[in-house]
Image (cartoon, helix red, strand yellow):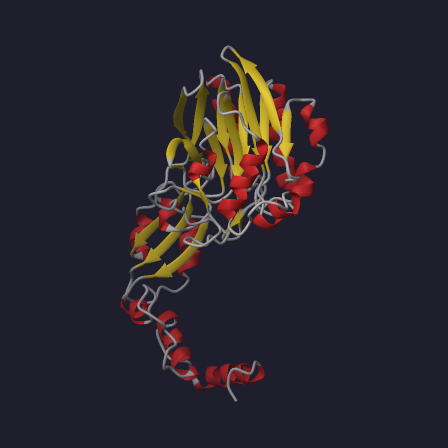
Length: 381
């Protein structure tokens, strides 16, 4: 049986005030084409379907269209909620969806729902575990030790009484770590990961499952073993250098007989890339390529470039961010040179800001306006 592992769709997300709806529609259509071409039987959706607990109308319409297309293709869907999703909103209508082979578990009530399917190798049990906190485990399993996430989740798995002699697949959205190292972050994760403290679960907690389809971390990677995987986000969702360097993929999972699991990573091609370009403003304009991409531009001009953003936008209409790397910006600590305000007065800081972006100090009238505004705001006396 063949599955495609998805997660961290974050439908409705904005990146630096740019809506990603069109890009998300494009990549979901591409994923649907992969599902058809690869003759996928079912979709595993590991949480963070939406970017917000109260999703936009556009985001809900996008997910509805995706589910409708999958149902029309005759594909089953196995989905759980993530920490960005509303448990109740995602769980609503789940019984009705199940009649169309769309199984969604948005909330934990003390049990892990299991859907059993059959193929040539016999039964395959698909377990659906949404994002939960250790305190919620304690509510339903009062005898369990919930002093750490790891202990709480081991109690959840033990309580499920999974038969390790049969084939089992788990879909979940949680912070799971390997024995040797922590998972690598992409840069766009907005949850707090308390690495080294109680908010993590050891990957060996899920050894009874033949494949573990995880969401939560936006960089695709295996954790502990090749068949325990974070799918990563389907698009780049930040300007972080770690994320910009990634090639997004989706895993296609082929489940054979017990213990026979094959993982194939298929690259995704976005409608538009998010790119970091760097150089003198004139050179960036003259050598512009792929102008429909989202752009993070770093200017290395030593002299201030007036209307730099507007000039770049004439060539790159989707400039997300503009900053400088030159002697003045480095002097101000823009490249990580330490606290830029330490030991400096209000007037020194304002003067340096004007010098950097205007090339001169404020004039007498400008200082009068700045000081009056600062006094009204209580910044100076």
